[in-house]
Length: 222
Image (cartoon, rainbow, N blue to C red; front, top):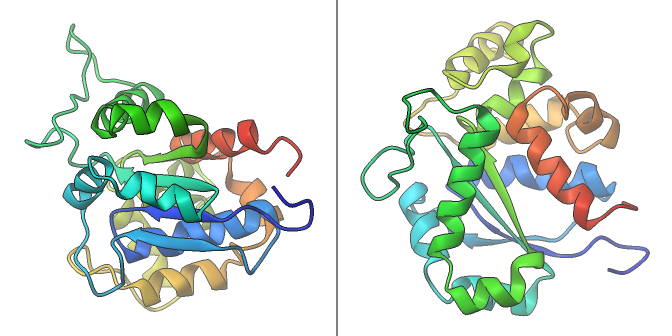
């Protein structure tokens, strides 16, 4: 990595709104408002995404192709529908006990790795970073709006986020049409491209903490 600039990232994500959130957080982490974060999945804001697109992309040569032009690939997925056919990651252990957020993220990460072409993962594993959002990336945004236990929620996060968006910003996000413009408004209004903002919330949500830890392991001097 250039001493003066952060590396470039390719992003495989569920949708454009996830791309917006991750771009701001990567910008904050490296302290660079012009960080290079390039779309792989979905390839444009106008192409349908979703978790099926992430899995299909992981199974394709597109992962290796992305690493030709970028230093790292970030793979993002939510766990809210992880038990659906085609995803099929259980939220419970063999005894029926519900998994902790870290345990569930471990399972989902293992699942995603299993979808990547084995030779590609063996060669590039140190350049692939997983952003598994338990239960959705909206959970990562709750610490921006809450100071109580709701900061660490991992269920019904969009509902909780919308309550405060309505109160503080006068808009809410449609669960069926997560328009990027609203996520950009959130990230800009809360100054989420600032390192101190990311540091202030990084420990509040288990899966956000996990993502930051993955970055720390690769960039100990960032």
